[in-house]
Image (cartoon, rainbow, N blue to C red; front, side, top):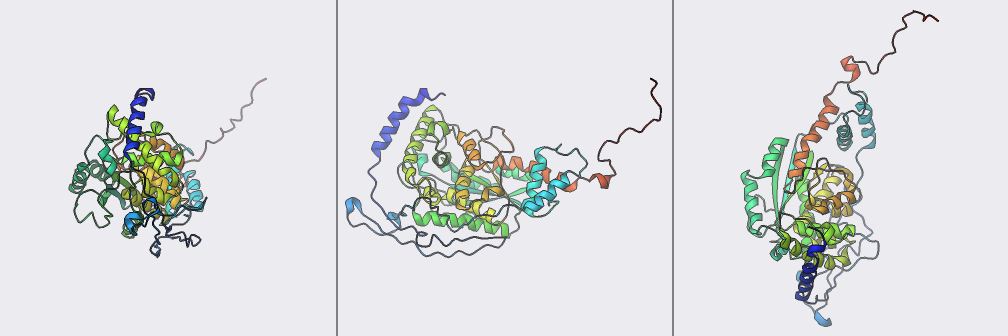
Amino acid sequence: MGERGPAQPQRSLYRDALAAVPSPTARLAVHPFGASAGAKHSCGGRAPARITESPPARVVCGPAGGAGKIGPENERRMPLPKGSIVTSGFGPVAPPDAQVRVAAEQRQGQLTKPDGSLGRLEVLGNWVAACQGVCPPKQFARARVVVFAGDHGVARQGVSAYPSEVTAQMVANFLGGGAAVNTLAAVAGATVRVADISVDADTDPRVSAHKVRRSSGSIDREDALRADEVDAAIAAGRAIADEEIDAGADLLIAGDMGIGNTTPATVLIATRTGTEPVAAVGRGTGIDDAGWIRKVAAIRDAMRRARPVAKDPVELLRVAAGADFAAMAGFLAQAATRRTPVILDGVVVAAAAVLAADLAPGAQAWWLAGHRSTEPAHALALKHLDLEPLIDLGMRLGEGSGALTALPILRAAVATLTEMATFAEAGVSTAATEPADSGVELQK
């Protein structure tokens, strides 16, 4: 559908939505990292670092300048000085081992094939070797998918083809092994973990240890989270990454489950890339034209609310994302910090990755884009991260399905670099020899 068709009802819905949003209460609070922004925290190697932070100071103003109630529900961080970025305890991430990458490139030239004949498989194998710090690399022994589940208040605005109750139902389906992520993981040689970060229901205790809250706020008219909740969600993602890596995971995949979650994903990506909503909004779960118009209006309103905090990744997650996005961002940043490669999935995970790259500069060197989904915002995010997807099959499910479909390709890249014989080992000549001189003179 072209942009001209829905334009008039879009503007009408947008005006109605704006009129329905009350004037925001004036709020002000000191950013918990503001007083010690110069003290950078970083974690190197595979050992997790313990970060200790003081509780955030809070200064709150009530409506019309009156006395306000001091508490988390009224809390908001003070805007940062220009150019400042809050990293929530993360620091710059060192890239994969460059020397090992060179060794892998040299080995590629010694294998029984014309140099470069395996195309991108060679580049992928070299990347895995650099991530592992060893050449030839080892085949992945414990590939692990973590599906971050959470509901979003904006789903109540009719931006999805499915009701919010589906999120909790799908969490149960994951646990029962009946979802696409379970089937694809079995084929790819991976295992699945589900983390309820903000599902709007009580879920199995096996998945709710890191739960932050029930649902996130409707971002078109209210903040997604309080300041303490966004900090808790980022910490939950970090903890989950540490738990998996400490248990032996050598490759991680982030997946998502949440009705309405492509709406905040699009808000984050469009805000960070400076893209107009109509150029970034997709069909999500398969919404019709009327649903698409409602989705554009909700995203436009959410982007208006997010604009003042567009350069602050923590605040942007708090205002315009949700607990599941904040947890995914913490997970992705911590995986890179712990020098563990990650395959990214679709638009929701990519949106979290855009913010994780701000939290931990350089982290994207440890990530691989598994696929390109049909959501327009996904292509924008991949371009922003400078990542080229492995596959493009028109997928739009989420759950980690696209990344899992790409995983066998990455396994093939490792296998060829590791298991192929070299020319010397196989006794194969490395180049064509010059034809022998027959000793016969040509008659003039």
